[in-house]
Image 1 (cartoon, one colour):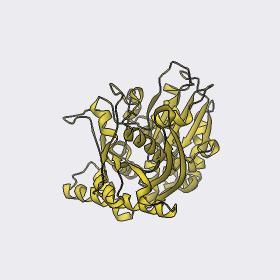
Image 2 (cartoon, rainbow, N blue to C red; image 1 turned 60 degrees about the vertical axis):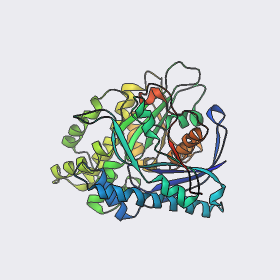
Image 3 (cartoon, rainbow, N blue to C red; image 1 turned 90 degrees about the vertical axis):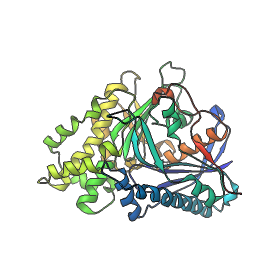
Image 4 (cartoon, helix red, strand yellow; image 1 turned 45 degrees about the vertical axis):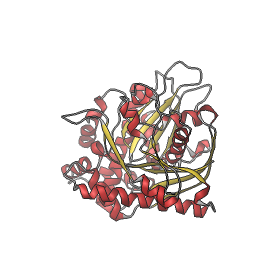
Length: 380
């Protein structure tokens, strides 16, 4: 079967679009990446997404419209990759769309219940592409007591599990998240959780100071130096005191939080702030590895994916923070850092297509395994 996976993450750096050939299901799943592209999100839509993700009062008509606007953009991404690959839309068996997370509440607080909201209307994608669309993957896991994230561990188990050693799969998108795969035959459970900020805070600082989308290869961070007072404040963030399983997102490490820090430390050099925020991502990863993974799993190997894998300075800082673990990239293992999450949703969509479960309860805290996602059929 041919399928397309769509992933628009918290970093807002584009719509990752992957075309795959996939066969089988469960342990017999075999997937081959045929093409990958990242479709840019227009700045006007980025601005709308950031506004919808803020904790400020947001007009409901903005969210309503953005849901459909993103649906059309996602459909265009599918059309583009099919055209590039000389594939007809009717040759696709399904499209798996993660959607754009607007807000995520993994645990109840005040009078809010655990919940999650991803937008990018599936009906628009299905109608425009004349293809079944599988979307809204997170909600069923939450319906059975899970946090709705992380969801990629199922695909990671199929693709990266090793016989002789445990492996950590670290994704660095807007948020950082890790899946630990025990060596095959080990009785330890697969666990996964968000390690904290990935590129999100760095990107916000670079956008504020230089008007650029991200710090390419850590250019600005390399020129800066640590701000000890800021580093100590970051280390006291309440996320580090939360127990597993746990997830986070833009609501905790996004624009509002970062801008407050930029105002507080406005007298410091921009590159020093960017350096410290880059160090903070490395620190947050190493902190959680040392607390939960290195000794319990005898961990020696970490494979990094996501946009952060292309920031060599960030990788250097991660390696420096945990010298006992070898830090590698997806490319060094024969995979694509950029395509990893979009490909994961092809695998999850394939499970849904075959009416098979694909959450990992030990990672999300769900009470049981469930079939994820909802299927939207195209118009006749």
